[in-house]
Amino acid sequence: MTATADPAPLRQKARNTSIDADAAAGFSDVDILRELEPLVAGEVNRHIGMHKDWRPHEYVPWSQGRDFDGVLGGQAWEPDQTSFPDEVRTALVVNLLTEDNLPSYHHEIASIFRGEGAWGTWVHRWTAEEARHSVAIRDYLMVTRSVDPDDLEHARMTHMSTGFKNSHEDQLLHGISYVAFQELATRVAHRNTGHLSKEPICDQLMQRIALDENLHMLFYRNVLSGALDLVPDQAISAIVDVVTDFQMPGASIEGFGRKSIQMALAGVYDARQHLDDVLLPILRQWNIFDRTDFGPAGEAKREELAEFLTELEAQASKFEQMRDARRARRSS
Ligand SMILES: [Fe+2]
Ligand SMILES: [Fe+2]
Image 1 (cartoon, rainbow, N blue to C red):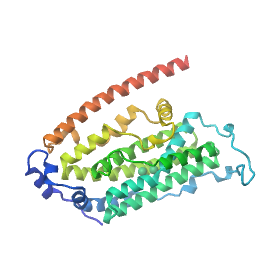
Image 2 (image 1 turned 180 degrees about the vertical axis):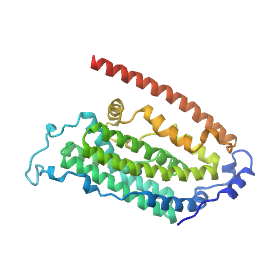
Image 3 (image 1 turned 120 degrees about the vertical axis):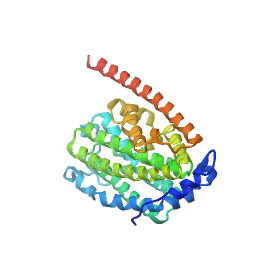
Image 4 (image 1 turned 90 degrees about the vertical axis):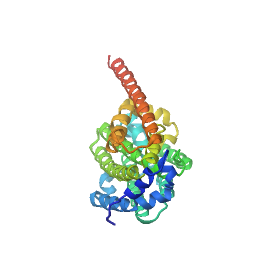
């Protein structure tokens, strides 16, 4: 499974057509899947070569475990059994529920990747790695009694029963764009949650998971890079649609609005991080603002993106000022 994609013939086909070249040239999702297959095969190999295997059970302090009440007649959960501040507990639960919804994400990815060849190999490998994340976080939270187990189970049932649906129905390039940004966003949220916990085992675990998310981001980012070379206008169109309509994967969690504000105020994930640590690094890597291969349709989408980023910059600054003022009030 090692090869490099050469999209030049299809790209030339696109250039030979006029307005909205990619679409007019007829690059269906099936065409794109086929043309990018060698690139995906290479990226799967690169990922497996770089991924460091790890064991979730090693990050759980099992000696702290005690039976709960109910079937085993142990000790009921009480809020004073945890020393985590409320915002850290919220972040840990949101991060876990996000990981819990893996069956829905698998369904989304498997549907658009069609499950064949290197694309299928990736879907299964990625799913296996993601499952490790929820296993590890859940075991940690239960053994350390960091969150209410009844509330957590209720939230898991509600969240998974809602499922996850990408707002850009089954469109391949939109799907890849979304996961590229989402993996990096998840990495940032996990990493910051670990730091804020100020608990060494929790921090180690969240940093370990964040490393996985970074490698996942690299895979999707590199695949979309190939798509940009192959079908520039279609790819930029998908990217801009996703960026301007981005929602975190946990957005359907019950009470997410309140939780996300609490997490933003705590510095787990806010507009500044979304812009500076997630959107801009990936857009820079794709060389979006210096590319010369967009047609008129692609140029129009790029302008739309620039306007959106300017607006987001203003929002991020406004939020930071509000948060600084709030912290100053609280400390005085
Ligand atoms: Fe994950
Ligand atoms: Fe991931």
